[in-house]
Amino acid sequence: MDATGPGRAYNAVSDFIDANVERGLADKIAFTDPQRTLRYGELQAATCRFGRGLRTLGLRQESRIVLILLDTVDFPIAFWGAIRAGIIPVPLNTLLTPEQYAYMLEDSRAEAVLISAPLMQALEPILDRLTHLRTAIVAGADAGSAVPKLGRLETHRFADILARGTPESWTAPTMSDEVAFWLYSSGSTGAPKGAKHVHTSLMATARLYGQGILGFCADDVVFSVAKLYFAYGLGNSMTFPMSVGASTVLLPDRPTPKSVLEIMRRHSPTLLFGAPTFYGAMLADGEIGRGAGSDRLRLCVSAGEALPPNFSERWREVVGTEILDGIGSTEMLHIFVSNRPGEIRFGTTGKPVPGYEAKIVDEDGRELGPGEIGELVIRGPSAAEGYWNQRAKSQRTFAGEWTHTGDKYIRDEDGFYRCCGRTDDMFKVSGNWVSPFEVEAALISHEAVLEAAVIGKEDQDGLIKPKAFIVLKGGYQADEGLFEALKSHV
Image 1 (cartoon, rainbow, N blue to C red):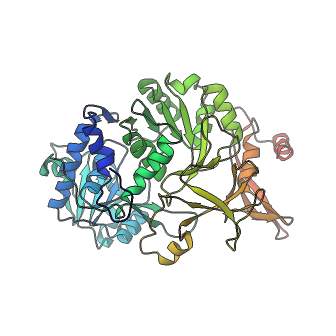
Image 2 (tube, rainbow, N blue to C red):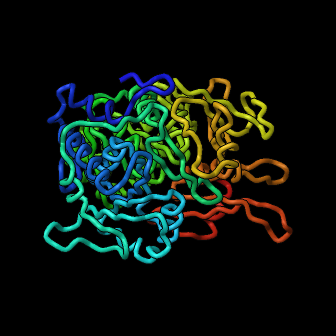
Image 3 (tube, one colour):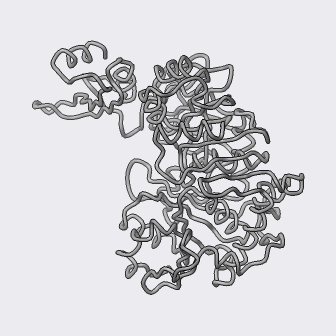
């Protein structure tokens, strides 16, 4: 469906689910987790059931439902089922503290929460403080046991809510510019902010980056280390593959080099998504080889932080595929500047994804030229419409058509963008701006270093100097000789 233009009737499930069924892909596998497989036809029926089931609980269009879910097939059913019903899903990180959950549940005014059974204990200490939450739905609860209770909340099994609805296809009367879902962005400072995304943002990222840069097609199989509750993971594992009828492998547990290699060998993904820390851990593990265990692997993608150049080089040597480094954000939903197949420059984040515009500005908003460090700002079709209940921060971040990223960048004469750190991470040493990332990248390029983090810290004279925290690879010892070698290396 063409969802362009303001105020047009449109619901994102029509493109990501219903269109695949209409194209004859009802029996095609959409998602696989360690316990279950979900086909596109089954996903369509389940989302129709769940959306109707939510309506029986009293949730109406624009009501919020918080999702605290592990990466299983329950997640896409819940996310898309809510959107189908015009109800706004708000996925949250499954590793948060009770206090963090309390803040987001109250801030979002969610009337319902869907939570994986193993995570329920995180809500128990805060139930008495939640003034808007009425209903809890528990995924993964044993069918033969009593419905798990969460204090005063009306509690249901996920399976029981699905059973309340009927599978006939339907969608709520939503509009293209209507808010479809929220994602909380913590940023580097302050309380988390609920970024509100509209229905059309999902297909915008899928077409511009998933298809335009990565070349997604129906034959692809995807595995993402980044979880579904991240904007990065949401695109990697859901919207990109679903936009073309491809398949995704989900891992509910914490990814380790061993578990990822097992998935690669068993499912043979064609695309692998991770962050620099993941790629470094895989390289350090020693078990990785050609294709990272998959004889079909054609491309890898990295985001979340800048990818050290030596990771890219070593990965290509050991695995035989390229890693495309890119930058995205919760506010822009996915990657907007990226390297691309056949045009990779190690140590850079690449060029703007076609469909997005980028520029670097100084503190006064003046556009800077090549070789000048400033803040990266972006214009494109996937920007959030603002933060929930945070007017001042919305005005600072979303300046008209341009979105401020808070990242310091520099652009070279060829149009490649290179990360210099966060705007609030940079510090001056002897009158010169220092990028922690550049120092970290230099340290990580040493054969003894696995990970490094650099901060600015006052010395005994009150002057700012860089201080590094380093994790060594196995077989290396922290001694004076290595200390001096690293100082010289930087």
